[in-house]
Image (cartoon, rainbow, N blue to C red; front, side):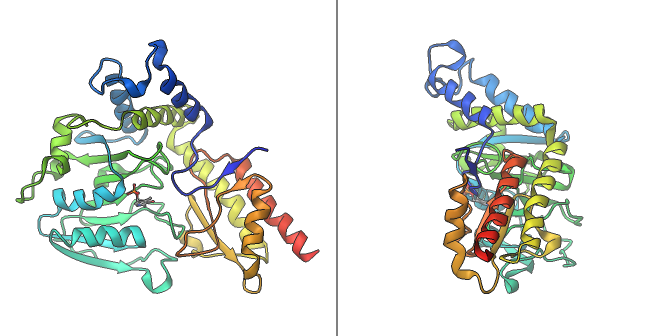
Length: 357
Ligand SMILES: *Cc1c(COP(=O)(O)O)cnc(C)c1O
């Protein structure tokens, strides 16, 4: 049976990308050596990193003056590195969930943090709007897609100060106006590659403004000066990222990724809205294209496990919601085919028919 993997992360990757990675693990380019066995400074690996960097720049139309880094660690490492490198005095943070809250907690170690708004009052089911942004902040930090709650900032917001964004779970799913950002970062394991890798797009002129001493390994400037080779980067995940970046380009780039995301999401949200057994948890206007959260409607709560089983028996797997929201979460990253979204909607209809007779 064909499986549709709705895992939130690590998550589904295009089959071709998984296969190319598997091939490179066994024998890279007919060398008789595994990619895992090659030096990160070898003549064979260097083009991998160079092309991955160039493709990320190309696909996101990254302007001059920005550098792309591929580093170990995850998004959580940048919760610390961002303020370490960019927070001179004061930073503004928009609190849209657990990940934002964690970023705020780390930033407070480095200076004054203004929480410009929070949606904690309604279980992070919406994105606050119309908040004031202090014009003297060094940056405004946003989480563009709230993986846990299924809300998303699908447009680059206007801000009097440069933006910094955690784009872990929606990088490469839409065009981004990078010029509005001092820094974009994320873990790779949602929409770029497997776990173990993080990406950073950072404006060079935003660096060098803090007076504190920064340990080398946490200094974006050091990583830029060393071309992501200050220490050994995660070579295999970078190769997977390269294969995935090539795939995104072949498929039509981020404009096409956004079109597909909207199409997939519409299939699932339409069924959530139609089906009396289910209910969405995020407010309509902030619904994420990437993580679709829903629960059993009142009166049907006890059917949650039964639906998970019903769907799994039809190849729709890993739809259990995050423990803090409950219910279901269907993560539809770039690799999820429209067919998968249709299969999930079909499961919801089939389940309704079974329950209602
Ligand atoms: C998954 C996720 C993180 C955490 O990523 P790690 O790589 O595990 O540190 C942070 N932010 C967002 C938006 C995420 O989806």
